[in-house]
Length: 507
Image (cartoon, rainbow, N blue to C red; front, side, top):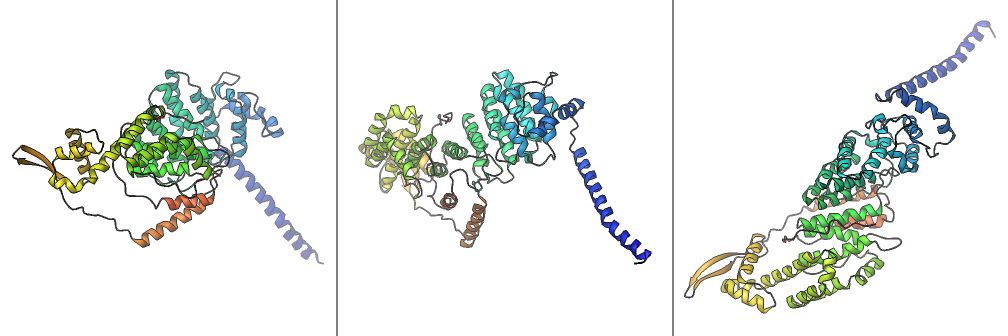
C-alpha cells in the first residue's frame, strides 16, 4: 500500500470521528441553550444556591419527601426542564410533601409565592397557592389570597398539569372555600369558568372542575352562568391527562341536573340525573345516586306525568337500593296516578321527609302538574264553559282552586302553548263570562335530515373511541351514554320554585 493511499484511508477514518465530535458539541450547546431559555427572570442567587445545595439529595432519591421548604423550593427549581411539559417526578414529590410545608417560609424568611414565577414554575406554585387558599380562616385572609389565585389561573402553564396525578381538583376546592369565607359565591364563577376553558382545549372533555362550577352557580343563585359549560355534551373522559374520577362524574351530572331544574329545563335535568343513577358501580351504591333518584322521580312527574323506566344497563343493585331506601317517593308516584286527592294526602303524609330532603317545593309542583293535566283533559269543554264552570269541574275532581287561580293557570298554559286556546270575555244575561276559545293545534315537527344525523352519530362514535376508562365507567357504558343523547321526549316548560338544596355535599 502506498503512502498516499494510507493517508487517504486515514483521512476517511477520521471524518466519522470528527462528525461525531461535532454532533456531540452541537447537542451540548442545544441543551445549554434550552436551560438558558427556561431560566426564570425571578430566579435569583438564593434560588441557585438552594438548587445547588440540594443536588446531592435529589440525585440520591428523586422521590424522597422534602424535609423543609428550602429543599422543596430547590426541587421545584431543579426538576423543571421545559416549561410546557409535565413532570411526573416533580408531581410525585409535590403530592407526597406534607401540607404544612406549603404554608411555611424559607430558612431566610422568604415567601415561596414571591420566589416562584407562577407562569414559569406553575406546577409548584399551584400547590403553594391552593394550600394558602384552603387555609384561609376568615374573610380578610380570603380576600388577600383571592387575587393571587385568579392571577395564577390566567397566566399558568397548563401543559405542566397534563398528568392524571396532578390534583387539579384542589383548585376547585380552593375557590369554593374562598367564596365561602368571603360570603360571595359569585366571586368564584368567573375563575372556575376560565380554569375549565384553559385546562381543557376541548369543551366536551370533563374535568374535575366542572362539578365545582355547577355547585358554585347554584349556591350563588346564578344557575344561568353554568349553562355555557353544561350545554356542551360530555364526550371525552380522559383519565390519562386529567385527574377526573367517578365521583367527579357523578357530582357533575348531579349538580348539573339541579341547575337545569332551576332554569326549568326539565328534559335536560332528567337526562343528567339518569346518567348519575345508571353509572356503573363496583363496590357500593353512591349516596349521590340515591339523592339523584329522588330528584329523578319528582322531576319526571312534573315533566312527563310519570316516571320513565331507567335504562336497561342500569345496575340492578343500584335500582334496588334506590327503591328500597325511598319508599315515600314511590308512594308519591303511586298517588300521582290515582288522582289529586290521593296525591295531596301522600304529600302531606311525607311532608317531613320531603322537607328533610329540601324537596317540599318540588312536591308541591307535582300537585300543580297534576292539576294542569286535569285542565288539559277539560279542553273539549272550554268552548262551551266559562272559567267559573271549569273551576267547579276542577274542584269536583279534587282541586282546591278558586276562579282567580284557575284563570292565572290558564293564562300561563296558553302562553306556554300547553293548551291551544285564547281567553275571551262574553256578555250574557247574568253578566260577563270569561271563556276559552279553542283553536286547532298546529304541529311544528322539526325536519331532521337523516344524512346529517348519520354523520353526527358517526362523529360521536369516533369521539367515543377516544374515551378512556374512568374508574369503573366501561367503554360499553360510554357507548350507551352516547346513544341515550338521541332519546327523550319534547320538553315542556313549567314554573318552578327556587331550589334550596344546592348546598348538599357528599363525602
